[in-house]
Amino acid sequence: MNENTEQQIPLWRVVISVMRAALGVQSSKNRERDFTRGRPAAYIIAGLIFTITFILVLWGVVKIVMHYAGA
Image (cartoon, one colour):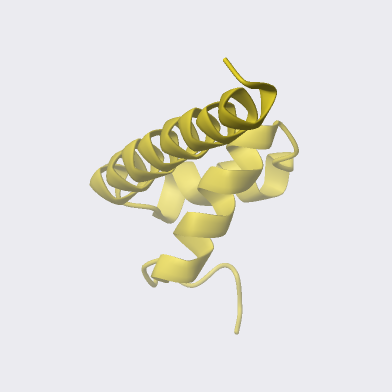
């Protein structure tokens, strides 16, 4: 698939792009592709879902650690 075509970015690429951006390892090429071809709503929704999931996982890990620490 040619990267220069004006097709929409598939959902799996949006998810991977959001995860890489959250970790700070997004390449400039992919960031530019996201801003030129991506739909902002898709990135906002994926970012919100990622953030909520990340917070819930952290909360769960803390609960488990606190439980086993006897607190």
